[in-house]
Length: 353
Image 1 (cartoon, rainbow, N blue to C red):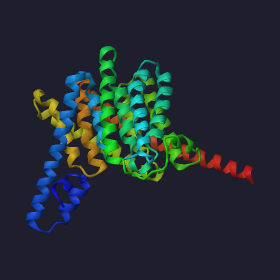
Image 2 (image 1 turned 120 degrees about the vertical axis):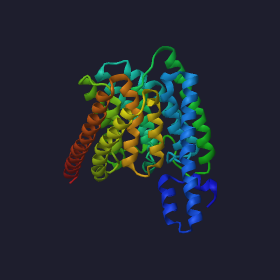
Image 3 (image 1 turned 90 degrees about the vertical axis):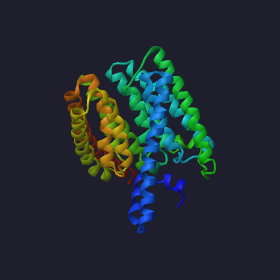
Image 4 (image 1 turned 30 degrees about the horizontal axis):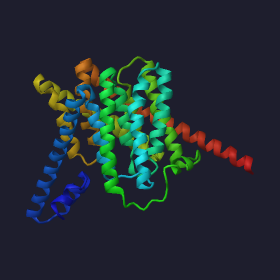
C-alpha cells in the first residue's frame, strides 16, 4: 500500500492495518503515517476555518466548518442519482443552508418549528436518497450549526457569499470524483420515489419531526443551545430503529465522559489556552475510530464556546442534560411512530381485504 493510499484510510482502516502488520519496521511505518494523517487533517481543518473567519468574520467561522464537512463527504459520497443531477442537489442543499437558518431565527418558536420541518425534510430528500452514505449527518448538522450560530446584517451577507463559494468548491470536487458513477436516476426521481410506506421515507419523516420538535421544546422552555438537542436527536435517529438502542446509551454516556474530560482541561489549563481545547478535541476525534469517543471529543469545541457565554458549570450542565434527554426522547418518539405505522398499515390491509 502506497503512502497516498494509507492517507485515504479511515481511522478504523488505519488501526486495523497497524494491528494486522507483523513486521516491526512496517508497523512503525504505518503508525507514523497514521499520526501524520491525523495532524494533516487537523491542520487542513484549522486552515479552512481560519480562512473563513478572516474573510467572513469570526461570527462566520461556522461556515468554514459547514463547507469543510460537506467537502470531506462529497469527495467520496454521492446522492444515488446521475452526477450531473447531483450538482442540482448540491445547489438546493446550499440554498437551504443560506436561507433556512436565518428565516427560522426570525420567527417565534412555533414558526421556527415549521421552517425547520420544511428545511430538514428537503435536506433529507435532496441528500439522503442513498441511505448508506449517511449524508444527513453532514447536511442536517450544517443546517443546525448555522441555525445555532445565527448572524444578521453585513455578517449574514458575508455568510451567504461564503456558502456560495463553498458550494462552487464542493460542486467541482464532487463532479471531478463522481463523474463516472453509473446511476440512471435523475434529480426528479428523488421526489417521484417518495413513498410514505417505504422504510427510507418513514425515516426521513421521523428524523425531521423528532429533531424539529426537540428544538421547539428547548426553545419553549427558554433554554439556550436548542441546536444541541437537534444534533443529539439527529445522531440517535438512525434509519433502522433497532440500531438506535445502543446509540442512545453511547450518546448520553460519552457526552458525560466528554464533559468530565473538558472540566479537567478547563481547570488545569491557563485561560490563555482555553482556545486550544477545541483543537485538542479535534485531534482526539481524529484518533477515534468509533462513535463513542468521537462523541466525547466533539464536546470540547462546543463547550469551549458555551463556557465563554454561560460559564463552565452552566455549559457543562446544559450539554450533558440536553444530550441525555434528547437521546431518550428520540428513542421514545421512534417507538411511537413505528407503532403508529404498524397500526395504519394494518388498517389499510384490512380495508384492502
